[in-house]
Image (cartoon, rainbow, N blue to C red; front, side):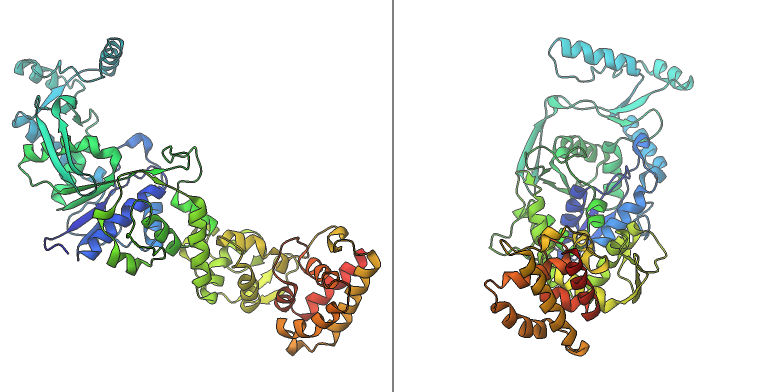
Length: 512
């Protein structure tokens, strides 16, 4: 454990959704802070005006809270170091950019976009790395003053020293070194008065007293620029941990074009927060043991930034499904059923009385509603009926949305071709006689004794009398489910109840 005052932050851009990789970064930041009695802060970096999306901030808040990553300070919870939204801190950035001008650590640049583009094209033609040629670095003071008075569009660039080696120790990557000759004179303040990431992140991390910065390896080449800015301001720099990228199975970077990358996509599909956290923890970290199942409390004990890998981590959906199946099976059945209610509603199977949309319901459940109707028939059903259906299907589904689809047979009359009722080479008469025997047996079982155990006890001896017991058990399963693959017939019958079971057997006989 660290003895210093430890503060980490997660600083996403509100440009749409909360990226699954962002949630992994937030998780690592949260774990590191909490296991060291530190604080975890949320800050929104919204200085890219062109990419902002309305409602994106709220999605970030909801996604983090869904995952259980409750931040100590942030835009919607407050704190002593706000505002926590960069667009509300513009005066701070301007003041600090002006300070660098006064210290001769930055300079005004009046180059137009056309000038910069032409410069870039010429450098590429000469097979040079595109880089600002510093043509505005030594402009005469009177010319600068005149152009500023005329409100000529300009930016402020940092002055990079020549041929200097900048070294730092990264928690994940160890010793890292860069030569300043590889760096460009970075724009710090844009012509619209908004800062670039580089100025804003340094100013904010310092003023918010961030001690440890976790971010993906994409930002590793920017770190020497940030170290220079800390030096220019005379500030103590934080510790950095650059995390491996999340990759698709083909080892390309996860992007919108290849599969789902938004946390809300996985919420809508019915992945549990516990499973997602368990899965994401292992995308870059390993405890060095055989243990794979972790709760957030266990992660707080075992997680270590020093054990985070350098290589990119493959996002394997099959592994996520495996985690989700495990956590669904461990979940209290009542809570699991409540979590499934939005998905059953969204698929049009039942009608509970929600006062908000499915999207919000999936995030904000569970629900205390215990009275429901089947949409198709308007028949009133109990929470216990739904619970029986969920109990049968949770062993086969990998997410709540799949449960919502697979339990359809309990809420709608199954549609199927009569050929589904046939067991291998059994004749039509054999199948029909089996169904009639089942109808008679089930009629005689009292409602209070209508359990899978009682059904098995009475039906199995009858099935054993036939040349093959499948001649009776298969058409029973097909009649009740209308599916080739389903839970066992006795389990389905118990969940449906005596009346519905008899109705479906009679319809099967009619089909024949």
